[in-house]
Length: 329
Image 1 (cartoon, rainbow, N blue to C red):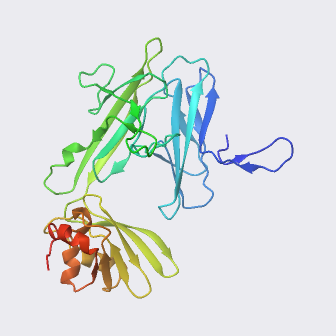
Image 2 (image 1 turned 120 degrees about the vertical axis):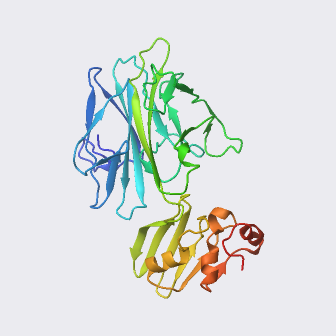
Image 3 (image 1 turned 120 degrees about the horizontal axis):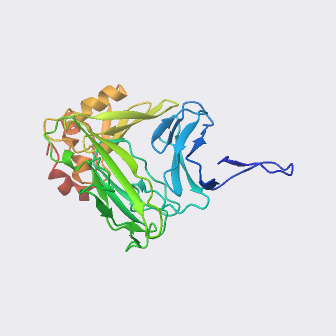
């Protein structure tokens, strides 16, 4: 199956497909399939259900029920542009319930669903489970135990309802919290691994296999910052900067100076955000622009005030910012 091109058999030219969701059917005795994702350019990263795959090399995908969903994500070399494909593989004549799958884009999704596969994150995650078998019940555990036999197993309510706003298709009634034990910690770097297991069942059908989703919550220290270079072209560079709460800031360097968008929420005693940006950009000519006054966007403004840099902020946001900023000058 080629997900990008349709090759006709009547000597006409191939045409590019517009869909990113595909269905395949296999014999009922098939237990696995091979997926060979090939990126169009070097340097791209590819994952299948969260597992890194080398471009042009086969990924062995295990079939976990009557229908198994595979999510293929390709991310460009710049780290920001990406495209996601979904492939549902169904067994002929199967009476087995489709195994659960997960995604975290829970408040703005529309069909087809594009699951965010498990992996490593810097903050607590909230996710949902779904089965493609209509009316199936899903049971899950987050302690690594077998949900078919464990006393800790819970039923996930996958009922969907229309959002009050009417926007974004639908929402789920509940979410599973992954890594909550890191919310009240001493501020030092901490890593928590969570193994979520789930299966789906329906009366009159064979239970799905138990599927496992492994999450790692890799909390940064409350005092540090991390960054990733997103853009580097024609004399301009853009970095994504995050703090322990995964608050996203963007440092833009031009030919004459630099601008930081937002100032995070690191607490008292945290590393100086201005000094951190100065090292990244290689210049001390850095001002800061605030998108709005919430504390996760304004707390380290004081680092720029103390360095006599300009702060651009809507005057209506100043009273809110002053409640939390680390220098009220």
